[in-house]
Image (cartoon, rainbow, N blue to C red):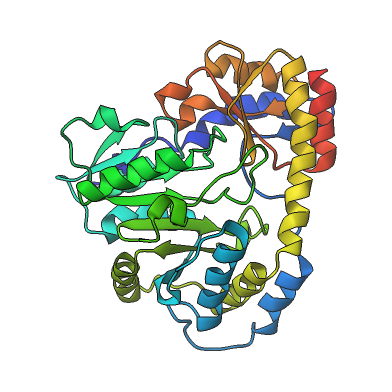
Length: 363
């Protein structure tokens, strides 16, 4: 059987019609459908990449000691997470690659249950399907009943909703998982982009009790450092689990290129560029959110991350069409699960002039 037969249709392929309508606008399309960074890679990161471009030889799967130390320091400095062993940091070829392969890397199969959020990044489900595992969409622990999941995904701040899970909720999930010997994987790619209130890592001592057993935190540099094209991320947490991932990835040749590791080290050591990028996104959000609300949409959650989760209380494809008629492309909420069927996701990842164009068209 073809592996692709196990997977759903790639969601963005279904937007071709709406994209064509939006592209026909006299002033061109405003594409708010994807979370692709559009701002330049900061010069200091470019220089770090170029400085080692002539280095031959294979890079270390585990990453350089400098990279792992920089990740530990950044987790402490930026998010208040202490107690990470540098040996328990593993660079990955973009976090989508990790999430898509993680169930298989952990040895999961048809007998295992993977729990994903009810409205979620599609790759959680894809990874489980590729491993042949069973899938349950559940935000609350009570829905699991007597089931004993092997893997529980959390995403806070969430894509697409921007929802932030509180410390008490996270603590309950950790306790539940430990009672059942389940692994908790927390996708924290948007942890540095909180607009209202605060957000905690699964590895925060207030959540984990200072014990990282059974916990993995996934971090990306795509958003905060504009490194989507570099495919730069890392996973950290339980030393035993990270060691297992490292062993399998060594055999598979899954290694981050050395110049990218150098760029990551520089990015993790410097907070100034990340703060500047954060402010760009804050300004775009401040312009786009009220424009959507004035146009009659209701914003839900969206207290963090790079998206506005909105509804016109109608089927999401109707809302996508409404936007397309105005030359704006947004993502239908059904991409992220049945619970998103009456919502759309509008990304903040468009240049300032395109955000301004969207605001004007919505008026």
